[in-house]
Image: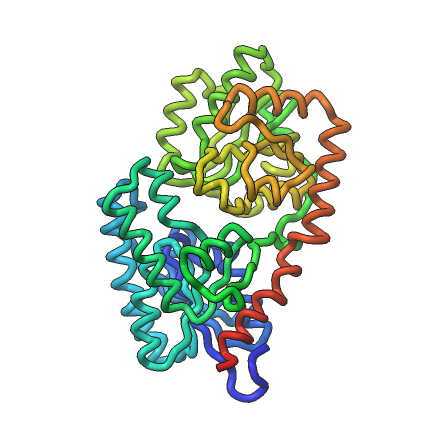
Length: 399
């Protein structure tokens, strides 16, 4: 809790998504605001979030343009350089107007330590919010451990070295902070990206989304290379053509660098009549799709990055009482437990079989959905993470 006298002021910097669209960042920001902190956010603009400055729920949001949504090593270098420039400019703007006592840096990328390190020279605290393991993310995207991979490792090392406190999204990330980042264990806190149940509302299904078919398989998330949308589409083709299930439709919600490529791939697989790509949509449309779905899928590719990462979509499915099918990854299994069936890793046909087995077993769907909802309510919801976030901040300002 912030002191009763002068309020502590926090500047959150996030590069890859606008606020309040980035749910984890927004939950952290509003939690801190409600706990008595003054909160500012620097983030990029995005569709529906074009204002360069606005105040929402007493949180001041400062947004900057990015040249494009990067793809490829050179594209990321340009994006990260432009973002870093604007983060410095806007940090100075906040410093000279609202002020801040600590910078809360959310990766990716890991180069925000340059902003945090500079302001540490002026006596400000630096907290690192470890969203992604960027060396593994680079390897997952490009399949190589070259010069840029070593840059990712160096940035990560310097970030942990400068951080006064670090928060991790799960135990796997905490181990990386301690073992690879050399952070003292007592300064690393696990704060999971738990869903807020007042946002993930259970509403009546919208039957029109099934396009006249009996079943709907739902997905929500980023359309990127490591998200495994190609595996999901191959599973869909196996279901429709090899297993002869013309009674199944697929609803895919989300945007990203691979969206158009995946639309073309769906046509190549002759799935255009069986798959709906919505792109990025408002929460209401996302909720309609997921509440209508009979089964939800997480096709994230089985690799080192995804094995150690907690995927928000799994907990969102569970919060809505939906059974899940995914590949057998460490953190995915920790989140879902009995709410999911686990396909053989990177095996689209086995994923297809697991999906169909659930579609044909309503009792299992209900049982798994109830387990998942209860697990979110009792263990994984954001309310359970709030004390951990505030404990990390108490330590941050204890010295």
